[in-house]
Image (cartoon, helix red, strand yellow):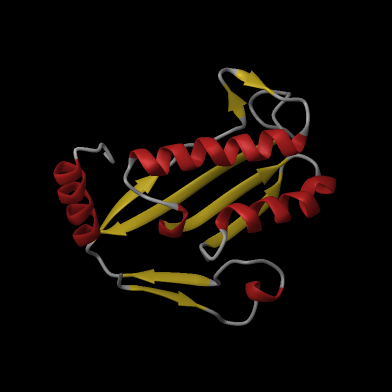
Length: 146
C-alpha cells in the first residue's frame, strides 16, 4: 500500500494514532456517517457498551466495503462526558490494534439522541489493486466480501 504514516512526535506520545497519513490517488475510499452504539435499535445506558457497539457498527461498515481497521485513515470521536476518556482510550487501543489512523476527539454538550454518549466517524482507504485482488479472491472462493 502506498501509505505513509507521518510522525511529527506530537500525537504518538498521548495515543496510538498518526500525526498525519499520506496516500497516493489510487485508492477506494469509504466514509461513514456518524455511528453510534445502537444495537438492534437499542442504546445501552453505559458508556463502555455504547462505545464497543459503535465500533462494532463501524467495523461492520468497513467489512461491507471490503476493508478492515488497518484501512482507517481518520477517526473523529465525539464524546459527551470527559470522564469516559480513559476507558475509551483502552477500547480504541484494543480495537485498532496496530492501526495508526489520524484522530480528532472532541467533547460535545449533546448528541442527536439524549441517551447517546458517543458517536464515531471514520474515513478509510484501500488501494484499488487490493480491492480488485479481494474481489478476485472472493469470486474464486465463492465468498462475499463486497
